[in-house]
Image 1 (cartoon, helix red, strand yellow):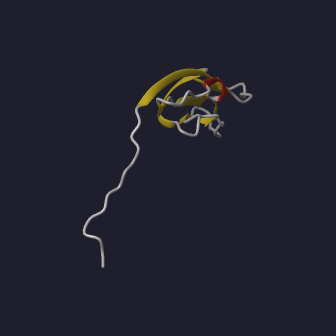
Image 2 (cartoon, one colour; image 1 turned 90 degrees about the vertical axis):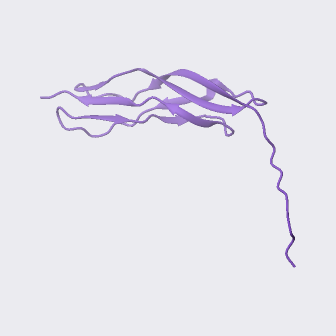
Length: 100
């Protein structure tokens, strides 16, 4: 016999939005490569009861192979974001290679 009704209870907690501007860790750039920024902005939400450790968050990029005159937008790779954090926004980075 199936129950006629059931209930589910989920804890609801307030969240806070946190916005940071962090330096971008860059690999060694070839001479003819250009990157449009040296820092990025990111926004994430965390439960209000948690105090995240901001100093552990790092950002870096991986360089794509580009032909002369080509450009790409890449999303930085994050590390150290608190487990309870949900990423809401992160800047993209434009990488270009000068024409020969």
